[in-house]
Length: 313
Figure 1 (tube, rainbow, N blue to C red):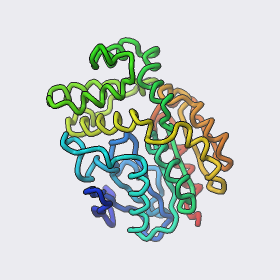
Figure 2: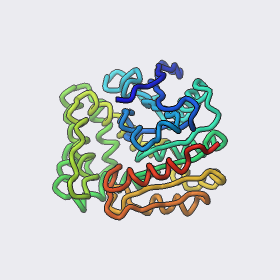
Figure 3: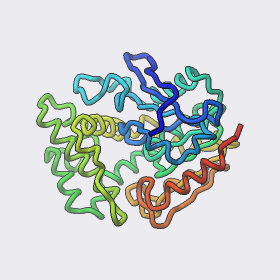
Figure 4: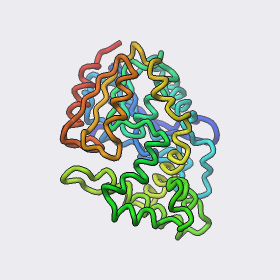
């Protein structure tokens, strides 16, 4: 297995320590990976699309998850300093710490939202973007995935809806689950985490052969993931609605590739299409047989895009 040539914990303030590690060629094209979730954490599997002889790849666990500390599976950990603005500042602090001038950003799912937000805030620090399973985490997208997807998985969605008190079932379900995940009773918190992650595993299952995410069997991972996803979704990524589309013009001059599965119904293809329309240097690649994630041809398109950007100054 490939070993990191450097790793560490970076103090980013607010009592937060961010875990990071670097792989590949120390003199290669710098790239940073922004994982999904929020709360999934980074793993060496993210290295697979990179030619490590040509890239210096930086992996990090975003605040509160993976090997970063404090870990939000602990119910006493406050989420007040875990917002998109905080994550963007963490990325910049890590870039400075590693003495990187500009880097390519690879992000997927939630990581695509974070990648777009980071690049629009710091365009001078981004050489290119490769994003797949593209989302912008607007209120409409959250409503779609927590409610409208019930038209495709009705029985599973009914169980998801019924996991919250009856008085909350017609409201914001991310908000309702977030309240349960902060309940004083650990049994209530655990039930909410199980129910939330069961729905997460369901709404992405739109292609043959989908396999459940084994990480959800880990109660620590499950709790952190559920707490962070509901936290970000209930606040629509802490961004003014539509900001990432309105701000896409700030990416002019930065090349990008957006790879998205045509069968990704939980994140419909109109989202990356709208981003590509607003971003003059982006190319959208729709993969006909793919859903949400890197399978069914998405990984190959991502790898080809990264190969095309290797060596870019």
